[in-house]
Amino acid sequence: MDKRELITELRRIVGTPYVLIEKEDVIVYEQDGSIFQVMPEIVVVPANVEEVSAVVRAARSASVPIVPRGSGTGLAGGAVPAEGGIILSLTRFDRILKIDLENHLAIVEPGVINLDVTKAVAKDGFFYAPDPSSQAACSIGGNVANNSGGPHTLAYGVTTNHVLGIEVVLDDGEVVWLGGEVADTPGYDLCGVFVGSEGTMGIVTKIAVKLMQTRESVRTLLAIFDDMDFATNTVVEITSEGIIPAALEIMDHMSIEAVERGAPVGFPRDAAAVLIVEVEGLSEQTERSIMLASEICRRNGAREVKVAKNDAERQLLWKGRKGAFGAMGTLAPNYYVQDGVVPRSQLPEMMRRVAAISKEFNLTIANVFHAGDGNLHPNILFDMRNPGELERVIEAGAATLRACVELGGSITGEHGVGMEKKAYIGWLFNDADLAAMTRVRHAFDPDNRFNPAKLFPTPASCGEVRLEPGKIPAGLWK
Image 1: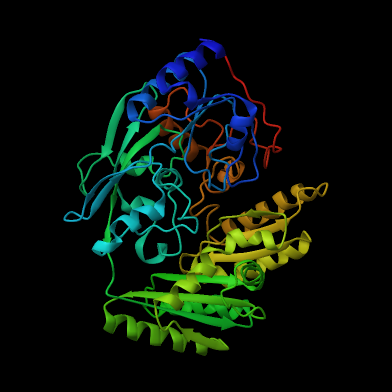
Image 2: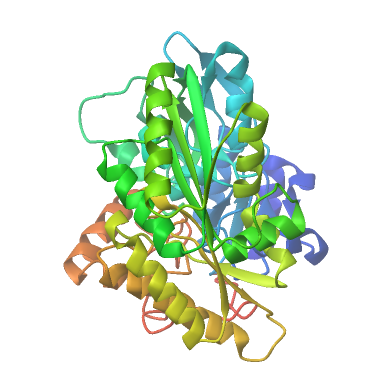
């Protein structure tokens, strides 16, 4: 089947309006939240699982790759069509199909926006726990692909801890369920294998997620520090005292400046860092925990500690924290965000290394991160229009990830590997490890057609840090 025949078949399956091939139509799909840009060849927007199955079969007949895409908020190039073929957009899969409060679960389609799940059940005293900073825009399907986390990962875990089962379209178009609607099913945990596979094993079309009951009491404080070491040491001491906050978040001076320039919330612009501590549970527990956390903050050099008096003040703090990434545009035309992880005890040393990398490469780095579980987000600020600057940024990003690994951490905590970090995955795994993981992938996708050139090193990229944006060859038509 050649390209023209494939387009005809795709139009028959989903309807002509939902097969996009003109440049002015497909250009909006050339990039996700990463720096990579590849012009798609074909974008298909199916409406149901039957259409997805038929599209997968057509792609198989044409021997072309297929790249699943949700909201396009991913930060590692996971939704970029690195080897051409079909982008399969799941934005029409936007329904919450079932809410079962008695059993604390919901079944949703992958295009449902993360925050909309909580909105649908909040009036009944429930919420969906994984809350990426992009939760008002990111899709549940994308969260499943990258095993996304968020500020409240410390207490509640990442996406895999809240997914009970998934409906998946396999490489031959077969539709199967992995897992189900109960927490424990016999046999291999194939749902757990699939979550975090970054679209390399199949297309998710339904997701059964856990719902949690809203806590009786939520208390939040903001601690202001004049030294980043004081802030990171405070995180280490809070957790060592046996307190398990719902969230422990740090923003540095540059991140504070970005927020206050963009959508001000009242963060002190002269601070070196601010720490947000949030505890949830029974009223007696949260009162004790927030008092103890306040004492620890002061003991570790906080110049001021403010406890939110009401929900409006709490929401304002979180508005600033969750708006930090979007506010980076107030500081520079472009930013490149990393997603490394270190043990909490290594946070002070890691932040010193980030500062040294910033100086070495003569680049401004704004830090905002999930301090409670050591998940860092150094935002490297730059202007892509300056010759050679992007190359320097990529090198600085690699240096931050290398430092994370040297300190006992990882190259990603929630954004995934995608195209961005696949050349670095060998820092964590040896050849035997990678071969074993590749065999698992091939069990689901023997022809490597689902989201190729992602997650694992390839011969063309083993020595490459990245591919030039806009210069990735597309078109493997046979």
